[in-house]
Amino acid sequence: MNTSFLSRTPFNLDARAISWVEATYRALSLEEKVGQLFNFLSRGTDPDELERLARLRPGGMTRYFGSDGEAERARIAEAQRAVPVPLLVSADLEGSRMSLPFGTQVPNPLALAAIDDLDVTSEVSRIIAEEAAFIGVNWSFAPVIDINRAFRSSIVATRSFGSDLDTIRRHALTHLEVLQKHGIAATAKHWPGEGYDDRDQHLVTTINPLPMKEWDATFGRLYRAAIEAGVLSIMSAHIALPAFVRSQLPDPGVEAFRPASISKLLNIELLRGRLGFNGLIVSDASEMAGLTSWCRMRAAKSQIIANGCDMILFSRAPEEDMAEVGQAVENGSLPVERLEDAVLRVLALKASLGLHDATRPRPAGAMARASDKAVADAALRRAPTLVKDTIGLLPINPQNHRRVLVISGGIVSPLHGTPGEFKLPAMLTAEGFEVTVHQQQPLVDPTDFDLVLYLLGEETLLTRGRIFLDWAKLGADFVGAMRRYWHDIPTAIISFGYPYYLYDAPRAPVYINAYSTLDEMQAAVVDLLRGRSPWNRSSPVDPYCGLEDARY
Image (cartoon, rainbow, N blue to C red):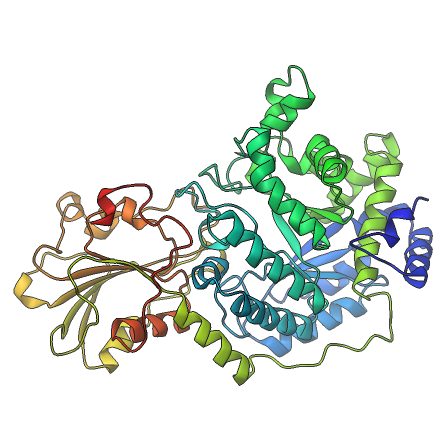
């Protein structure tokens, strides 16, 4: 058994921890070793979940949380008691709606990039880490270090720290360092780098099209920085990097487009060998079409491990998938040495977090502290960006803009169900405005309204191939799609998410990016519309989408 890597960065295990890893590994049967390679998806209140955990003994679980924080804390504690080897308990703690629904509501990465204050990012990261640790989470699938270059990319959008390399590096490193300081393993994702392909790897294998010299100066630089900072894990995604494969194989053909999640060249040769990453490599969700469009879902499980990942994210049929991986070990298609290395790294991550120490006290703290809410609310008020106001509309007031027509399709979030309608119209009503809300733009008499607001709430739209301002849907019919009010009624478009709608409405006279659909962000925008706070004029991406006319 080779355990020489356990004492090196990022695990940095001492002799006692290494002894625990070695002893635990030796005590595991083949079935239990295979179990350590799986990270189950946990959602809702499935009554059979604890029995399944006790029987199958996975290495970890990723929890999608309900609204009751105490119930979630108790459920995680029960899950830990159900297994002999402590679980890695993971979550996508990216901020905004990709965070704890019962915790402090904090900005997402794009909003933090707009603020561009590392003290704010540090404080938001602290809040995320302390609240996650308090309920029993010990692993976060963040930070996202993708580069938001393809403005049509719905998968990157608000989840990354923008398009500027230095901004991404500074904020991502701050986030990962604060997480790990508070006992939460950080994960840099999505290897080998998303953001130049405007498609979604939930739906198709995406392509990183950069030549290696440019990749090395961009994504390579970001991953090296994360590795040097001691990031404990990296998520290998369903993204191909043809330039590297072609540099290694004389005539790779379709192999150039193999997703990283099952690519030995990208995981072992490039990430481990050339970049020197010694931590844990976890696959992205193994049932995404970016992988299953390449190979059969069940066959992908053993391929994930055989090609360099150490943990398989999610399984729809865990008994069958575990059996398939076990058979792959027995028939040699998954080498025993690769199995051993993967399991040791899973155990090493657990030991590096202190999960092997039964005497370790649970993190102290509480959920949604008033002091943390004040910090988060202050940050949210600094994020919204006034991209342009070509008519001198702002600030608004009930004297000049009393009659407001709001046009909005509501808040859209496939991952979270239907969060509901915007609260902003009610907030304006409380301020003395008369607000009329339409889901589709009606045919109006310009004398009936003093202001038109389009409220757009598409924030993190996983499995949406494209995001765009859908004039046809807003208009309800062919004629309505072509209706524009801004020559007769002052009009503003406010995006609480996707920052690129000017591509579809370049001549909109007033445009605002607010990055997040949270109620607290809506309240912040009302304050800014009313002139109670100064607008942020800094954009972490190009909101004009390269269009000169969108600036006017």
